[in-house]
Length: 103
Image (cartoon, rainbow, N blue to C red):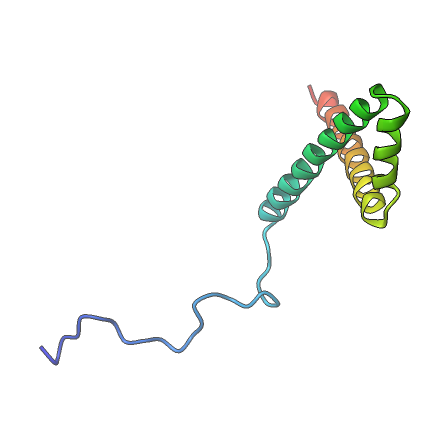
């Protein structure tokens, strides 16, 4: 029994490569980017719906939305979502145009 152990001998190499030497494939980077932009656009849709409801509620509702969107965090959320949404829609428009030319 001592000659045939149940577990293999431990290796000296690490179990996973370190992030600084690991090269991400393009498909993994594209997948992560697609998920992040999808979450951003979903949050943007919620903010847009909140803005529409606040505008329809009159000046009081608009002031409540405006008070939150004027904070630095509100400006960061609105600005980031605006840039991400416009860049994603522009990319989809141009990629659709390019694939239409090949048909």
